[in-house]
Amino acid sequence: MRIDILTILPKLLEGPFADSIMKRAVEKSHAEIHIHDIREYTTDKHNKVDDYAFGGGAGMVMTIQPIADLIDKLQQERAYDEVIYLTPDGEQLNQSICNQLSLKGNLMMLCGHYKGVDQRVRDMYITREISIGDYVLSGGELAAAVLTDAIIRLVPGVLNDETSALSDSFQDHLLAPPVYTRPADYKGNKVPDILTGGNLKAIDQWRHEQSVERTKQRRPDLLSGEE
Ligand code: 6GU
Image: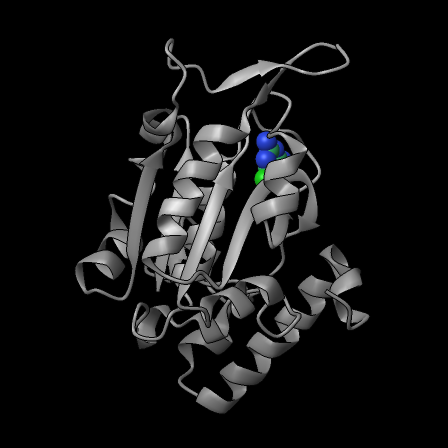
């Protein structure tokens, strides 16, 4: 899996992939993440990547030229399965979309800023528009980091048995059950007896019941079968 991220703030994307599971995925060649600075492609003599909106109104719009040149260059080098634009007016991200995208080979992600990109970028290049929730971020970078993390951990080989994605919340439309570790008694707050009793079948059943109970309480919408 190769992910190319197009941004005007490449520094924002240095941190999220530098540690833990993402770092290991890259080191073990399960994933390649390439960050591209859109500003390096502008032909504007003042290095501008934005301009006023035609028709007026507050806020700047990201110009088409540097983005189009960068996307053209990348698409000449390889075919992309999806060219994703991260935007609050996109389709809301969920586990099912992450599962789909984790099966792809090459993904491009464009991070928006200001009032967004010139609509012609969207019309000419973008195959999918994704939002990570109903709130507004200052730019698409953190959303691209969220999407990349959620996808890459699903690529076969990235997680081991202990961190398996199969037991994640949402993977089976249920939230994860409560978990405990040592000590078994912390200042009188005890771990449920069932977990220390050694009956694996009973433990599995308890965990499933807890998952269902938690989902009923917190996210009944998940139980209706929809995403
Ligand atoms: Cl993808 N971008 C921005 N700027 N804000 C968001 C978002 C994306 N998803 C939720 N809020």
